[in-house]
Length: 252
Image (cartoon, rainbow, N blue to C red):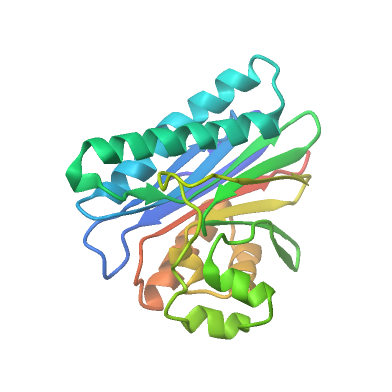
């Protein structure tokens, strides 16, 4: 699985693994460095329903966004509308197939604005985006989860949240049907920056500082992705784990 390198100046590595406990992999990903779009979706639901939901996202979200952006529409509006449309589509499909009832998926995506040298990040659920540069790692997303709320309110410490029985309980996902309010933000993305998108199969196993150290010392984005997944498996691999690492190449 080689790095994807294109005229855009972006290099992307990626890897997904079912982990050591689950029988199937319900994570899905999309990588297109030329387009500058990257997606991780973490599906949920029985009878392979999570895999169905996450695959709908990675198949449909790029088309919805690219078509709308091609008409000159605002990126923030386009991303929100695309998430809302997929939420409705996944819900409709789940209601039409009894085996897929209650399926849903998280999603975190990024699309490059090459003109302004920014990454526009949108997410729903507890899959995450990080920016890494040198010795610093910054989380760009806040989990739409109960324990994240309790941490922000001072009810739990980050350490307690990682062990809490409700740590996987999220209050927002695609396909759930509640009023969807995706989080969307824009971040500078210049020479030397690295953007990580991942499912919670990684962040449940590794602390942010460990993720930073692996990325900083890796020889390439693909090497970093391979090591991140390997380290998560070494810690038990209790969930599917998916990572995408995008690097902004220094000008030659």
